[in-house]
Length: 390
Image (cartoon, rainbow, N blue to C red; front, side, top):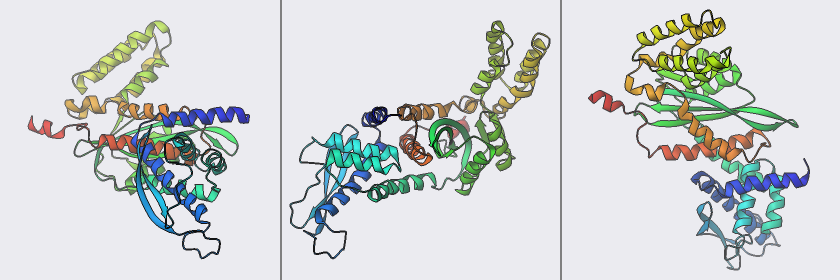
C-alpha cells in the first residue's frame, strides 16, 4: 500500500471517530489529551517532574479545569499550570482553531494503538507538540489499564448466557488475518442484560473459546441456567468442557439460515423455511416434536439429506420450550447480540485492517463499555417479577 493510500485510509478512520458522539470515545480522548498536555508542559519547562536541572525555565503548579466543546461532546480537560503563568498548551491555543488537529492526533493515537511513530508525526506536524514514542505508549497504556479493568471486573449471578463472535481483519507477522472477536452477554438474576466480556483470538477454535469461558468463571460468573449460541464446533466443544451440565439453546435464527444450505433445490427453500418456522412457533415441546417428525417424514424421499439434517439438528433449538413461554422471545435466538455487532461493524469497517490484536481489542472494548453504560439505565430485559405475580 502506498503512503498516499495509507493517508486516505487513516483520514477515513479519523473522520469516523470525529463524527461519533459516543461517551466512551469522549472519555478516551479526555484521557489521551490530558496525558499529551503533561508531556507538552514538560517540554516547556525543559525538565522532567522533580528533576533538578540548570536548564529548567519554570516550575509546575498544578492543573486548571477547562471544558472544551467538540464534535464528540464536551471534553473535561486539565490544563497544566506553571508558576510564571506564561504557559498554555501549544496545541489548544486560546480558541478552537486547533481543536480538529488535536482530535485527529488523539484519535490516531486511539485507533493505531502501538503505532506510536505515526502519532508522533501527527502531533508534531499539526499541534506543535514534540513527543516521543515512549510518551505516546505511556498515554495509550493508561487507556489500556482502564479498559482492561472493565474486561476483568467481577461478574456474579448470570441466569442466561449469550455467546457470539464476529471477525475483524488484523495484521499479524506481516500478513492480514481474520481474527475472531468473542463476545459474551448475560442476563442477571434481576433481569437486566449486561456485556460480560470480549476477547480477540486468532480463530474460533476450541482452545480460544474455552479460555474465554474459563475467564468468565474465574471472574465469578455462576448460576447459568441456559446458554444461547450458534453451533460452531469450537464453541460447542468448549461449552461442553466448561459448562457440561448447563442446557444449550441453539440460535433459531442461525439454524434457519443453516437449513437453507441443505435444501437441494430452489423451489423447496420457502416451504422448508415455513415448516421450520412452524416448529419454532409451536405452543409446546410436544407439538414441536410432532411437527418435526412430520417434516422429517415429508422430506425423507424427496430430500433425504435435508431430512437427516433436520432430525439431527432442529432438536438443539427446542430447549427453550423448557422455560416459561413469556421468556421464549428473549431466549430463542442470540439476536440480542446483533445490535452489538452492528455497532462494532459501524465503527470498525472504516479501519479495514487493524495494525495488531491489541488495537482491535482496545477499540471493541471501548464500544462495549459505551453500550454497557447505556444498558444500566434501560428497562429490564426479562421481568422475572412479573411472572411471579401472574
